[in-house]
View 1 (cartoon, rainbow, N blue to C red):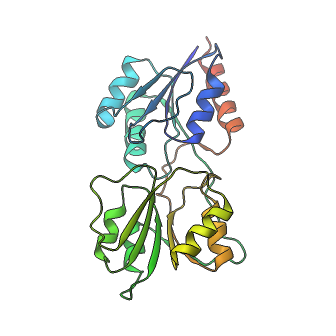
View 2: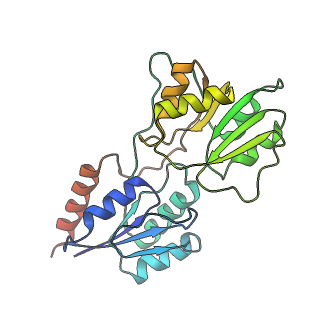
Length: 251
């Protein structure tokens, strides 16, 4: 039996956990950071909360005799991924990344690429503009350097604390979103620029299609550079990887 720890919080992690339920070849645990309120949980052993940095994760891997660590966190969960890499190396645990493919611009898209939220914020300019922020809660403070803009901020959960943006409206919603609803939202709000992170996936892709249809400029924040770790973008691929590890672990 292969002992697997899945660092989750994404649809990829949930899909993998669901496939491992009832498969007697694996003893899997799903770990959630606890940042999203009322998460959807599969019928699998799970834990909620942090580990206490890389050292805490390493201790957990050792205590639970984990054979394989799957980093299926959000593509922008930089700290968690860094801790996973360090802990896996310290405990000689096999590490793999399970993520969704990044978005790519197509014909008619008006994308500008940025390495981080700060550079995107600085490029908004001095003239007040109507900006749609869909970058989650963690990096909203980056836009406090340009408070003159009119922001529509969409998050799953309310940011704590709220960013110091005097001209802003907070919209709490969870995808998937339809193309029609995204177009109506941006049109009614008079959006001029969509700022988003290249998270990939289908649940929130409609905003990009809506921006293209409406001729709205997109500021796309690039994913962090990933380390030299095996990475997989489909459920079948990560399952094949786990089967290989299972066969290697057999006496």
